[in-house]
Image (tube, rainbow, N blue to C red; front, top):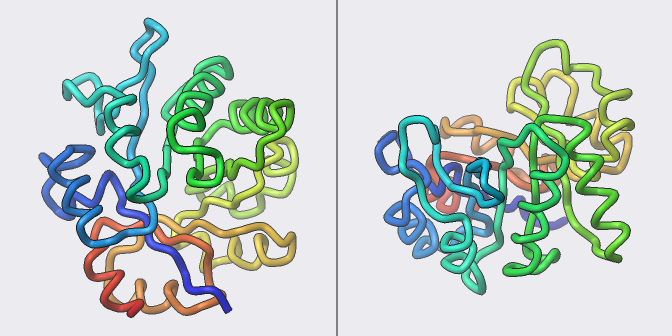
Length: 212
């Protein structure tokens, strides 16, 4: 059985919010040998994108520069904070151009945006992992939303995953991405082979040591 993969949440800043989505955190996570690096991507409104935790207060990093830094060193976990389908497709297209579809998972919260990226990838003949983020109690029974979105990855908050979304993904044969798993006990649980495909954590060093 394949081992569970590890994604460094907001580039693996840990408890230091000033390091979230920073090149410093990125380099530290890459040095650890993480499988994926996760970062938040926001539209600037001018056709370009910025990597930041909160673009209203952070200057952020150029999206292209982050993709270039990840290329060939890890796989990218691009969490899109977009409102339009056009922005979702544009950001996904840019990531695929740099990293390749095989080294990328794209996640977001809007079913319409997920579907737009899935439709675009299909039209381009790409096998791209595109996940619908589920984190609210009312999303514990997401059958219609997932079907409408055409998501091919279930992206679940760890609490909802335990309450039923892990079983939901398993019944449908969909990979499960669990976020954000930070305690040692919870990491031990989700890192057992077969529990998930990918685990996102603020503590990638701990996760990798527990996984072995």
